[in-house]
Image (cartoon, rainbow, N blue to C red; front, side, top):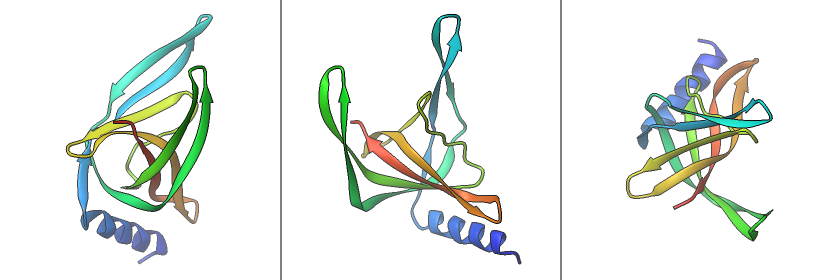
Length: 127
């Protein structure tokens, strides 16, 4: 058994210890003419693991309405088949009953030998 297969199995085992099924709403801004248009798609449901992070990352964000603090106190583990994205023109969000609405803050791809093992995601709770 290869190291890649072993790591994928370990990740799947970790997800199965506390699985949650989510449906991601993906919004992508695409240039159109002199501006942008938003393409919204709903992805197929995936099984992930949501967890509370020990060290919360507090970011001070300045926007037109003023200054606010963002906390990424939840995280997510997903396998290599997940389609989770982040970036300036992309917004992935989903709801979890009892916890609220979450937005993907950042995605870290876990690699082994150039192949994707899975994804570790920082989440921002928005409500």
